[in-house]
Length: 156
Image 1 (spheres, one colour):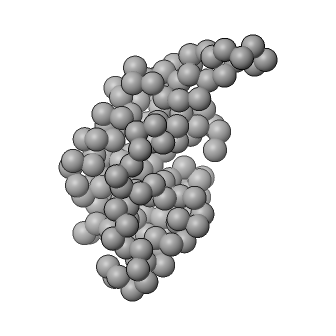
Image 2 (cartoon, rainbow, N blue to C red; image 1 turned 135 degrees about the vertical axis):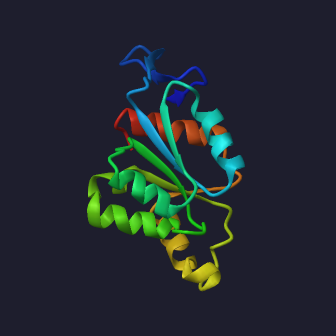
């Protein structure tokens, strides 16, 4: 199964060995949270135009957007950002929107993987990696597309 650049998902047909195309529509939404505009642009290109994309440049901004009512189907969130970290977003979700906890992946360049580094985010980085919630930069385009395809089809 994979998300194609035209916004459709190729998935295996039942029993036939072929594939069928499932369309992803603008009713699906993804929240991208990163303070690096180049990462936001890269993820937007990978995701394509058929999915509604909201962006936030900090954890605080992402939390405010969710408080204001956006309800993303999936979230990609950096760990280390000024004005609210990925850990802040995760803790907000756990306390206020637990249904979204399973729909978040963290993207990180690995700068936080040492205990105590970057404001104590090393332990959080390691925990998310252990839980399978971490995608390391530079990320693989097919991996991102597969994560999105699985999430939007309700498969994890």
